[in-house]
Length: 165
Image 1 (tube, helix red, strand yellow):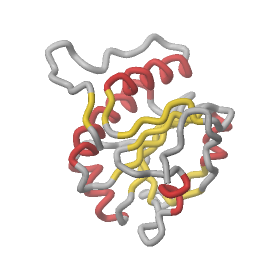
Image 2 (tube, rainbow, N blue to C red):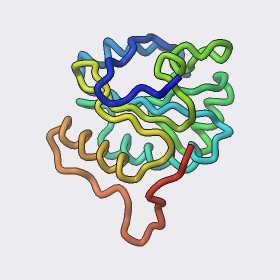
Image 3 (cartoon, rainbow, N blue to C red):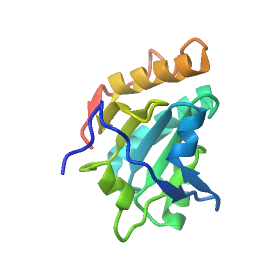
């Protein structure tokens, strides 16, 4: 199986959220683009990347664009991960018995991030940590919000260009 690439149609899904609500990709796309960030709590690259994804959420929120994590762990472990790494954006729970959403998107590694346009097509497919893709998603979020891009990484910070997931 291969991770879905840019240009592919994003498979529709509905998943539970750790707060007890549910998330429908189709409904979210009606409000604007969606960034899906798949992860597993034991993944060191996820632990590196998710605090940086939190910066996107803090800068742009969920207005005009939706940012969600898709966990491959049970609810309690997902909540512990979010707390440990300061993540406040919604965390979705893929079924840990069959991983239907992870499999539908062809995940081979985590983190894997998808930017899905309002038309339901994947525009960015990023496996591992990629600073270039992160900056591209920041620019897309700013564009969706019709605001200037936020400065999310300070010049003195040592942020890797790439880490394989």
